Image (cartoon, rainbow over all chains, first blue to last red; front, side):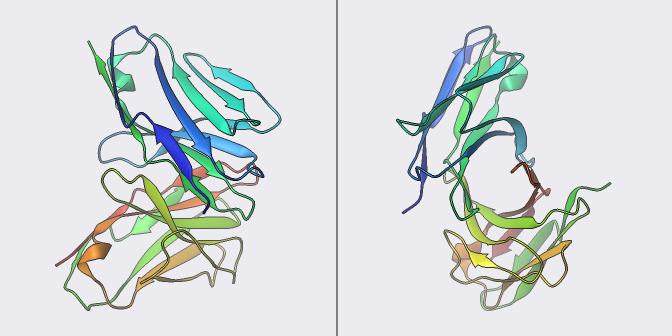
Length: 111
Length: 111
């Protein structure tokens, strides 16, 4: 069935280091790939997204890359800060407007 | 502009009881979604709607029903609650650029 897989499930980095989270998806017709940040007890918040006609998008310290041929996309956070600690989710919009999410990555940034 | 709101915030049900969760959005979005979030499993799509009067099944629809009688509201019903339905429920609406905005969530416990 349609799904999105996300790795790793947990990631711990030192403040100032980079963090990379990877996702793969199953539907070759998917054309929209958002990333969400969820702090404890809060709702998911959209932080960046990428569409199928673009290979890379950057917004200050965060960037997302997309490889449509391989059906995978990644989130890159540079110069990590303690406030980046949260759970990050990738998602993909499937052909029928269904939006599916990965299982999440718990990122911990150690001061 | 309240965005996406959910009612109630918390609820405790006994097995077999029924309840309705209400989601409301004031952004004039056509698309609305109901997800459940369980520890380590990310956000799983229950049902969604692509417009007033329409609904569609997502990944985990069993045990739930939905209705979209008005564009701004999307209701999620549990006819006979089971302990397996203990979860945090998030509603989201989506704009034409595919960007999803989430409500604050409803924490449901079924005993």
